[in-house]
Amino acid sequence: MIKKLSALVFISLLTSAVFAEDGDIFKKKCGVCHALNNVSKAKQGPDLTGYAAKRSNEYLQAYMTNPAEAKKKFPDIYNKEVKGKYQFAMPSVKLTDTEKQSILNVLK
Ligand code: HEC
Image (cartoon, rainbow, N blue to C red; front, side):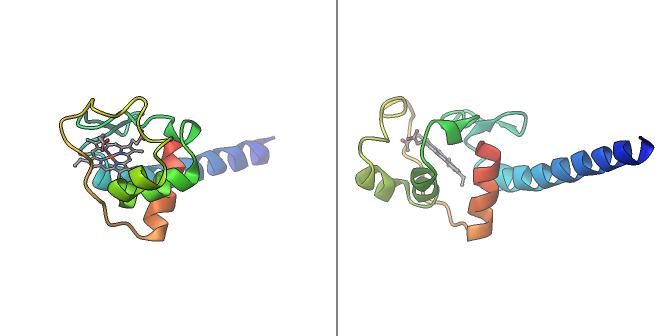
C-alpha cells in the first residue's frame, strides 16, 4: 500500500515537473501576449487555454512559427474568432522542434 502510494506520488511529481518545464517555455515564448491556464494572463492575443482541442496540431505548429504563412495555407481554420479582434498581427516566433512540442503539450 505504502509502496503503491509513493509510486503514485512520484509519478505525479514527475508529471508536474514536466508540465512546469513546458509551461516555462510557453511563458518565455508566448506568455508576453497570450493567457494560458495559470501560466500566464497576458491579453495581447487570444487566451490559448485548451486551444489544442480547437485547432489541428498541424495548424498550431505552422501558426506559432509563421502566422502569416499559416493564415494563407489554412484560410478556413484561421479567422472565425480571431480576425480583426486584436491590435496587431502576431509576429513569427523562432522555436526548436523540442520547444514546439513543449508548447503543444501545454495547449492540451
Ligand atoms: C508579440 C505578441 C505575441 C507573441 C509573442 C505570440 N503571439 Fe500568438 N497571437 C498574437 C496576436 C496579437 C494574435 C491574434 C492576431 C492575429 O490574428 O495574428 C495571436 C494569435 C495566435 C493564435 C490564434 C490562431 C487562431 O487561428 O485562432 C495562436 C494559436 C497563437 N497566437 C499561438 C502562439 C504561440 C504558440 C506563441 C508562442 C510560440 C505565440 N502565439 C506568441 C500575439 C502573439
